[in-house]
Length: 116
Image (cartoon, rainbow, N blue to C red; front, side):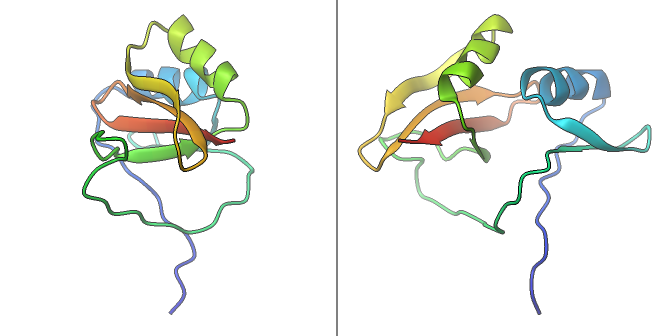
């Protein structure tokens, strides 16, 4: 057996918030819309990964999602423009990433990062 894809699902009764966050702030494309279930993504090629941890590094909580971006400062500006409170960072970590933590509208902790 070969795992082909892993999809993260978050339950919500407010798909408009999902559209504002995923499409508006993150800039993801809506790939599927059934009216009751939406999927957002990009054309980027990704590897299949599942991470497990006792902490998120530097004493932080384990995030629900990791999102690697190509321009952390641009991502930071989008979150600050949306008045999303940062829960950690931005900080350059000793293992070679610069990152910050935010919560999505549904309470999930997200680690936004860029390799340095």
